[in-house]
Length: 434
Ligand SMILES: *Cc1c(COP(=O)(O)O)cnc(C)c1O
Image (spheres, rainbow, N blue to C red):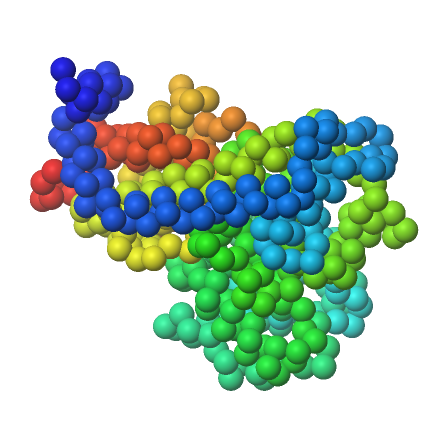
């Protein structure tokens, strides 16, 4: 039996029909050059991480961790040096006490803005959870309650920056600009680091003292540069996405100007204490090892996203971004047009999971959303979206958002399962052959 037959048998044993197996192989073959380019970027990322760890003199003792106040936690301090080195920033704050991405972003904003200041988003509406942080939706403890105002300039219909609008929106009170790299739950294009750099240069050309923060969620290691290489004063993200490599059980990071990081540390702990306290408990080995794996894990997720787009385009579905487009985050949106297809897609992802595969995902009314949302995830780390996962709001045009995959074989398996699942329920367009 040759190698291909062995793989075919493994897929057959897992419930696949030959037509699906063959389509998967044919589509993968077309993507060979893309995958090679992704692997090359992962190599560059891997070297960047190892160099950063060596330069910070990461040692066995760094993995031990502390309890209590956490004074002199050399592992925590070295990890922050490593992050600063990867992002080419003066300093970084990387803590398990930062509970999620929203918390990291809230921390960055609330610590660097003062009453009377204004925050500007020049790229349209920010991520849903930030609406309550900023006070776009009134909320106890929001920036608005502290007298910090918010201005927004939407992207132009063609996705370009509205430079005139931005120039007008910048005023004497504008202290900070927030730029979201990933599209989140929108279908606007994700911003490349190069485009972010262009925007920052424009803003600094008018107001050199304005702080430019980038919400870097889902973008880390996708390109060989980061927004901080393009002039961002502060980049912020979640450790249960790309930079945690699937191993970090919790955490967020901020990397940027020394003063911005110091402000954030004083807000996270307390004025006078700053970065000096904050025990790392037992999580440092996962944060280090996860970061070590992050470039290849991100590469697996990217391959999965492109593979999914290529397969669904084969069946005529609209994909954002398209299979052939360059990637700046790991998110893939597919417009499935019918609610039953969203269900079948999510059930396919779930049935390929290492954890909770026996569970059937159902739509539910999630707080903060205006339609029931279905989510598929069988993750080792609860809610981790660098692991293979999908979610979809149950409303037209029935988009499903798909991301993650700690290994390429798992991403491949999960995506093919969605096709098999749609086929089993007769939900694929009848006029498209395999
Ligand atoms: C995930 C995400 C967030 C918020 O992160 P949580 O960890 O879910 O709180 C913010 N912005 C973007 C673009 C994200 O993708």
